[in-house]
Image (cartoon, rainbow over all chains, first blue to last red; front, side, top):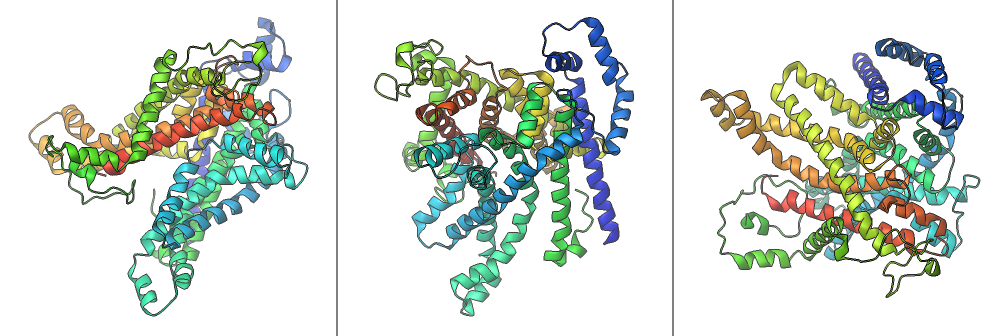
Length: 317
Length: 304
């Protein structure tokens, strides 16, 4: 088990390093002069003298060759220093740390909503004997996946805060203000949960042991909840990593819709003024979330299903 | 073709049915069956009609409206939908229907470009990885794993940061985010085809590697990748409109769909139609794309 753990940790670190490199190269090699963009954004003027540009280049180290810069920035990143924001002059790590709590709060509310909503949908769709209802419920996810998340948010605002003033439309001050963004964020995630869970439920319900349980006289509710759901939720666990990435990314858009503070505001602001260090930090953060969640899922697997430890402990892919 | 198409009307679109016969040689005269196939799937017919309408609007917007999407009438500011203005008017008195129709060209261009980038780069990577094998495959697929580890939107935003805003930039950004998916599917398919008897036979009979690749492997590996491309079309519409909603698409007067929806958010309280109807258009298009791609996946060929 310890060797497995070390192996997975090394793998996670490798992915993070590669993501950092990818972000660095992407932002560095693509056309467009970062220094000119920075100067234009930071000083808020159209005229920047060539001397000033050269000065800025030296200040941010852009006059050095690429490999040197890469090595230096990677070394800094390993010590937790992700550079300073060009627009605000604050360290990127601090900027991200400040933006994180509201976003974390939002996703923490949205995740259980998504799991419960998607799970309930999958259960209802497989449980019902009514054929039309079942088809309707099974087709709901494909409708949900077609709706732009930001549009869903705007519709919720329109109906539930302007038509019927139940919830505030904007801001992060109150707990009630969290309801609409969380629901908006939960919709696409619930779709994913419902799709995966209903598929694996349908598979599991065909298994012989379900037949045995029913033959022994277990009621439908008991078969579904005690026998089928347990085994069906294991495959659903694999999408948790995807779910986390999706929630983080969608949070950026949803926060923008509801004018909330958080990772979303930081990110869109940084992209608008081409604040490269911050964007790089956000990309690496996204990879970090994905890697951490997948690590946790992989470690949780053997606890939930004891057969896994012996069978696929060192699958490389 | 029709035989495979007509075997299974409702059950599990999108599920694989490996045992199904490929049924290619069904006779053409069987027109009634074909008719029944379409009649049983009103949703699919509707989806194809929607796609056709959007395509027409993208290339010949004049077919749908003769109004100028950019010129506003001060006397007709924020008019609700009606006979004169089907989708109502916006805050400058511009006809929203005309703007949505003309926006189709921009949004569709970005979407198609995005899918093309993802398709070419992704399947190129997957093809090389699957066909070359060895360390080339390891390196390329590790790269793809990294692309998968970063949420697509963040990748797109990084590309937009580097390239600046605009329709083409957004399209490239969305395309980059889609590369990993194509690479994986293509590689899996190439691996599957590479070990079939006919590829071995072609090799043994002395065909050059590029002939094997181009004539035998590629055509047989392409099907699922094309299905993914149609599915990705829907995803790309959403991603492009998200980025455009965030304000990274074409600059203001251009009627990109995402930007139109964003423009309506200030008037949600008293002009519901601006955001609602535009967003509904996007949703209907994506639904149609998903329906068609599901048909291609589950019902079109018996192969998947």
